[in-house]
Image (cartoon, rainbow, N blue to C red; front, side, top):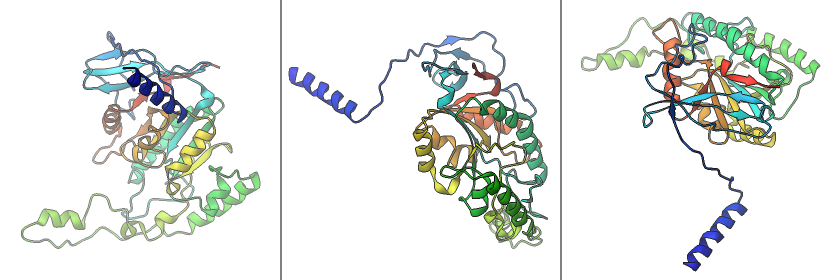
Amino acid sequence: MKLCFALVVSMCMLSSSFGEEPTRTYRNVLKPLDNPEPLLADHPEFVEPVRELRRFEAPILVNESDADLSVRAWRFSYNARGIVEMPNRLQAKATAVIMVHPWGIDDGQGWNTPEPAGVCDFCTPDKNHLAARHTHEVINPFLKAARSKVSFVMYSLPGGEDPIRKKLYRSLRAKPSDSDRQQGAKELTAKLKSFEYKGQPLVETISLSAENPVRDYFRQFPGLDASAKYNNAGFWEQPIPVTKDIDVDPRDVVIYDSEGYEPLKKFLKANGIRHVLLTGYATDMCYCKTTAGYENLSKDFNVFLVGDASLATFPANNTPRFATNAHLSFASLNQLVTQISWIKFEK
C-alpha cells in the first residue's frame, strides 16, 4: 500500500511538473427553469428562436477572479433531456471576438458574383445581400460595442497574406501604416475591378445513360459548382476583402486560412487570450471547419458561439432562419451558445 501511495504521489508530481492545468470540482446540479423565454429570439428575421420542452439552470462554469464580462450560455444534452444554461464570468482582457469569413462580395468593393451562373458565399446575389444586411444590422454594432473592451477583434479570410491585403489589414505578424492602408485600398480597387466576372451559362444538354439518368444528371448539373466553369478562372485567387458592412478599425486583426490553425493559436496564447466570442459565416460550414472555426478553437480556448451573430447557408429557402437554428442546435451538443443580449461588459 505504501509503495502504491508513493507511486501515485510521484505520478502527480510528474504531471504537475509537465505543466498540466490545475483542476476544480464542478457540481453538475441542474435545476429546472419554469416557463423560460425562447432562446435566440432577438432577431427572428435571421434566426428562428430555439424552443425546447425542458430547460435547466446549472452552476457558473467559467468563473475568473477580477471578471468584468458576463456571458450567459446554453448547450443541449440528450442525457439531461433538455437545454442546460449557465452563467460565466470572464476577464474581457483575456477575450477575443472573432468573425469567420466576412467576405466582401457584392458590396461595392469590386468583388462580385460572376454572371450568369457563378456562385460565391451564400451563393446568389440576393442571398449575399441578405447576409450583408445581417452583418450591418446585427454583427457590426456588436463589434463596435466590444472593440474597446476586449483585447482583439479579428476576422478570418480565405487564402494567404497577399501583397495587397498586407497593406490593408493588420495581421498576426504585421501592422500596416496609414499610408500603407491608403495604397492598399487603391490597389484593391484596381485589382478587383480588372477581373472579368463572367463564366459559362448553364448547361443546355446533358448526356444520360439508360440505367442511371439521375446520377448522370447531377454529375453534369450539380447543385453547387463554384469552379472556373461558372466563376471564371482566377476568381478565387482575388484578394478577398473584409465586407464594407463592417467598420474595420486599424487595430483589428485579419487571420488567413491558408496559414492554418497553429499560428492563430500561438498568437492568441502569446497575448493571454483564454476566451473567444465567435461570430460569422456560415454556421454549417466555415464557422465550424475553417482555421478560425470552433472545431479548432474549442480545443484550446473557452469558445462561446454568438448564435444571433451567425447565419447558415439556406438552399431552397428564402430565409436563413430555420437553417441557422438547426445548425446551432446541433452544434450545442458539444459547444456553448450565447447571444448578443447575454454578453454584458461591466466596466
